Length: 336
Image (cartoon, rainbow, N blue to C red; front, side, top):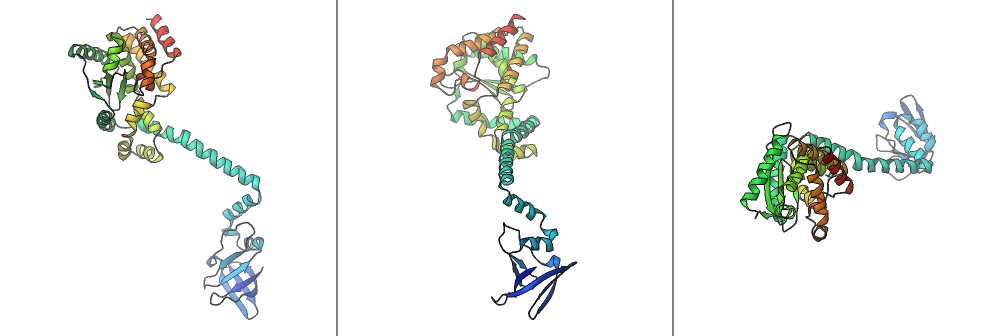
């Protein structure tokens, strides 16, 4: 290979010929005859057809624009470089690589990360979820939630109905029912760790306990399937998801801020809602309540749509009812 040699002590370049004999590279020119081990010579990455400077172990340099000859002399060091060079020379392949990389990134963040988060949340120890749930009410208070003003008799009746729902579950649960005033808006929330919050506005809108009981059954369905925790984990950052997957409780702490925002502003996925609906309808049947109570509760909330538009904390903002869900409850009630 024809090249230029520079000794590293001066800027003078000497025309030389570079040849390789096994593991030995020989550099010869006028008054020059140097030998180096091939693995001692640093060969830079090839970038298009730009000239390259080979770094010698004694500080000298070899300059050449003959990239094909360089790759032939040092084949063991250029596997990745050759691939990069081929991509540079073939823009179609390079563009395809960019598209594939972009698509893989999108799939990673839209499918892989949520899936890992969901699986990690489902396997999270209940003790850790309880720890998270204990911190959420404090944040909800900062968002306007206050102590309930419902009559004690009303709360006692609903607590008894809630206990009856729990007694019908396949496993013993220590879920807790709490009442709170959140302005006048009707709402019910399922908190991580096993807490159902029913607002005064919901009880006052329904007027009949049976409708509130139906909504409580739905919220118990969310608790049984850990929907709140899974929903928040699915939308968490990569760091939080990996922390959960590795059992690092710092990931649980990081989710705390996201739970109240999810409960107030977002909604469960369609699959989670269907799962909670199906659970509630069966639970109502097993406790002697009619599934049609749930359909009527949803219809009552739809009729309250004027107030729903005035506040983001209305039950419909986090549990969007559809006619399909109402019809499903009616159909389940017809078999009751």
